[in-house]
Structure formats: C-alpha cells, structure tokens
Image 1 (tube, rainbow, N blue to C red):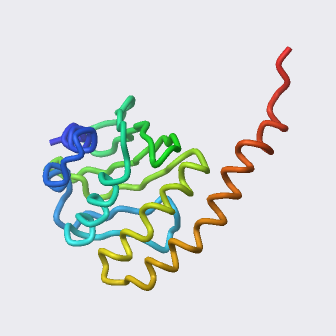
Image 2: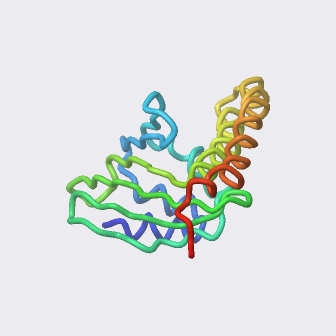
Image 3: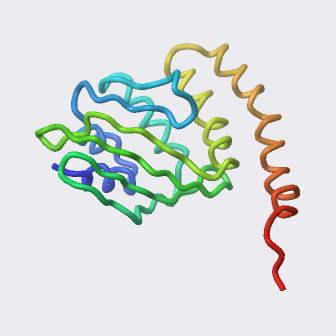
Length: 161
C-alpha cells in the first residue's frame, strides 16, 4: 500500500477507506499544537469523520518521497476559507501509515479548522460543555485573523506598479 488509499479516501470523503490506510497503532500529530496527538483507530476515526464533514473540494496536487517517507499536499475549503495542508507520512513495512504530521496554511484557514473541528471533536469525545466553550472562545480569534488577513496583511505586501 502507499499514500494512494489515503488520497482517494480524502477526495471521496470515505472514512472507512481512510481507516484502511492507517496501521492499527498509527499516530497523527495535530497541526494546532504539540500537546495533541491521536493514536490508534479508535482516536483517528472520530477525527477523520469530523474532517470529512467540514472539508470540501479536497484535491491533492503533490505526493513525493520514497516507500517509507512521503509528503502529500492538498488544497480544500473549510467553511469559506481556502486551506492547504501538507502531511508528512511515515509508512510501516506493510505500507500502512504509522505516523502522520499535519501542517496547514493559511492562518485564517487554520483558525477556521480549529473553529469547526474543536467543538465537534469535543462532542464526539463526550464533552458537550467543552464543545460549547470552544465554540465561543474561538470566534474572537477567527474574527481577528480574518480581519487582519483582509485589512492589515495587504498593507505589508509588495507594491505593484
């Protein structure tokens, strides 16, 4: 197996197919913090369900590396925000993903991901109070980042003649 199954599953939104790409004890490192990682199918499945519920227009454009280490990159949308995610994938001797580390850009896309994923993951993990709190706490950050991206960032962009 290779990253082909992982890519096909994401583009189709097929959670069951995605699970077949991961080793039973696979580890996925969050793009948000080094404090959070998901280990094993029982923790990965809810994350993938939430991801596929919120990400749209997933299209992979890069898959490079060798038989043990690969980097796959796709573009998508989360809410109205475009994102690009690069995943460093380590494969075991059976070609299954044993470790995946996610990197997301742009900042508005990353915060939108946090806004959508956080509450849903908390609910799936039996923490409805945390889900409500996250839903409220992320909104000001999302508004600040979106406003800064629209109004402040263009002020430092190179001038065009």
